[in-house]
Image 1 (cartoon, helix red, strand yellow):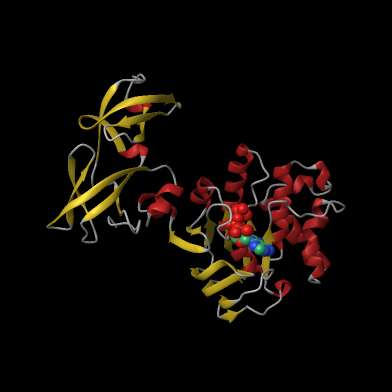
Image 2: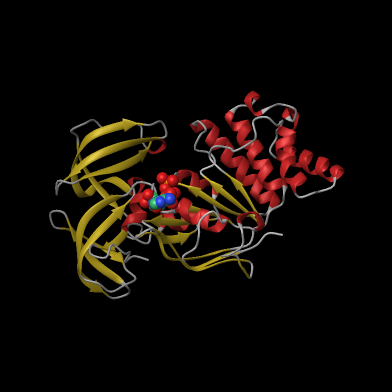
Length: 359
Ligand code: ATP
């Protein structure tokens, strides 16, 4: 039976260092939930607290309505997949997957049918008699996956399970994991520092920084409406341009001034005048007859789009992506251009607090 996971005001200290600070999350039953953040932000620490390998200094973690703070790791009803596979080298694929079921004293005939089914789900049934040394990295990771969910744990925890695989295999395996998770319907908490992987695989993502949660949301929400400058910079690419809100106008709009006296009117959710940071994704900027003046410094043809680096009139360098389906020409270095954007699509952030004003 899959559980929801509630994390309430938890804290983790290593000596005097606070690795996790007053952190709360509500993970739904059957959800694919990802902890995403740069190296050292505390993702693994939090996952290990959920698993029972790290103590919890303050707060509570609940599986369903059961507080598990003091429950030993092996009694927490979890499956785990790590980046180094952690499968037994001396056992065959079949024996590796059967291991947890034997330990749970599941009857022999039931073990056989459950292992066969698990191996079929991860598409390695034909390899069941091989030893791990006779498998590729991707196949070994499939064994680790099958072994984790064959015991039908309430929660599946995965810590960077794909980071030892090459780029192409990572993309293939994340689809395998996603499909498997949806087929089995198991609540999954997944750790990665790879933002593209997180966007591709998750129902919801928590973005972490220095032991704090910066934002929780669906991949599209996080990409389109980053809550602060950190998230806007961490997920995808964002251009940050200095500006100022000079006037709050009726109907939740404001006048924004930037560069050499350019202005535009944009929607805002919070009344504010003062310094702002304008955040625009490269694909939100377009070449136009009017708008910010600039000069192409580098153009990079990337097949489906051309990425331009452009020095704009206030001296900042920004990136613009132009899709090749929309144009037949690639602009040359040094070419003078003008750039505009749809003011209702870009993000405005308070320059002091770095929090979003637009949503
Ligand atoms: P990565 O992506 O590099 O694995 P992470 O987000 O998983 O990073 P953690 O491993 O959770 O980060 O580490 C969070 C912080 O806690 C880091 O600053 C790390 O140096 C510190 N830390 C982790 N484990 C210990 C430990 N056993 N003792 C002291 N400090 C630790």
